[in-house]
Image (cartoon, rainbow over all chains, first blue to last red; front, side):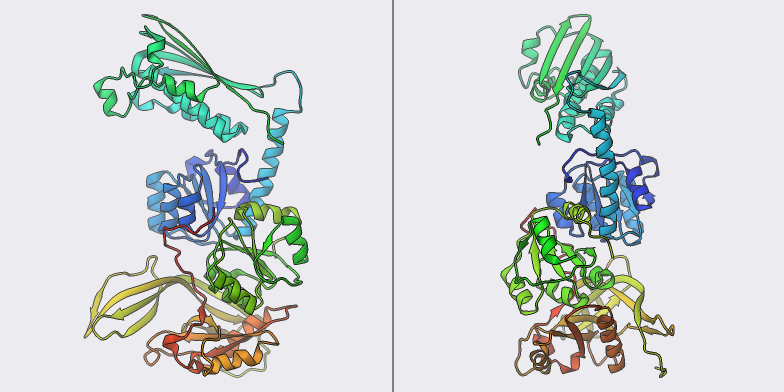
Length: 279
Length: 111
Length: 180
């Protein structure tokens, strides 16, 4: 087992394993982490820490919180009963960084997390099952987007990311799905009225279908060329509109089917294949 | 557990002179202040620190050996000092967390 | 300290984390060190009479007391700034002479040093140094090595001593070391 494997570890799991107190982030118990980094050297955290990780450290200074945030860590666990200071709490609250405190020392913490992780990995293996020819369905979800609500744009791809991470798919694969879904979501918000999104995940592939009601795409081929932008001034100001994102979706997905009718809408089907795990 | 057994099972590289040692428990920290207050005699000390003062800390707390993780390069002067003062320095390219998981897997409990 | 007949076995209690601040006066070049209990080390320059103090270094450190498990006696160690291991840098130094003498039996010499300037701070008594030594030796169960702790008074030239101070260095540096 390495810390690079797909994780289903959540803040709740870590909290229970370490009998920790949640100092900041009571409402973020469902946050999932993609790896564990055990260190007191913040320069390493910044240079080598991976996005979405949890930090285990005895260094309870503001630098630990800042470095974790900059490295896009989700959680910081302060060990050996060291209390996070007020400036750490304040910073973490502002940035949405979860902070836990535990009496455990670093080896203890590693042991306990490794145990839980082992249990979770084992159950993930049974979800994927042994080698059978029949495709096993794992999850199916439906969502809807209303393009009037700009501020919620991106929430569905975030949720899909959480769902897939929780199941235990490879984080790189999940990131590709999330990016593609995000681009698709943004397209709906910019060019359509509303859309239905469906997610189907099996042990063979993950499929995301975005079916919208909107003006449709007159020339799909042209839209596929990178840099073609139809975003309005307002949308560009918010950072959208460096192209319709279709080329980006094509880059990140394994299969892309686009069907569109002007005046009616567009149906985007994206498929991502699950590669068999390397032995 | 014998140090040699741990070195073999975890495929650790030895940077200093080696000798037979009995290992009891593991201590992980990169803060020497924590090592002084928390490490127990016979502990295997895991750290990314490579400064000469790890020799000083290791002997004070009677660590069985030091494992430098994350593939950190240990400078010659640290190894030279370690050899003079009989501190064993081992190296691994694995992360601290990975090493901890392997140590638990081979049965090294916390003491 | 009251004399007792107890053969003390010591444990570290009241462990408290803080910073050791090293200051230098840029007028007279005097060096001063002290322990700070603050969350963050005080970094501002300030004036104190004729002195203009600048912070040169602050290192994370800790403070503790010892308690005897048997009789409950508590011994504070506020005078202790740190410990350093003799690395044998000066043949004329008493500490190195001791280290050479004890090397074969693997007794390592450590120097307990107090805050600077030494004439303005209460330094560790011989008795306390002995207690400190006992603590680290008592913890060596089946070990083949021992510790001997001496006072910094034995150091020939403290200013140029190459003893390995046990302290955290570069903890706040942002430059990562080679590795992963």
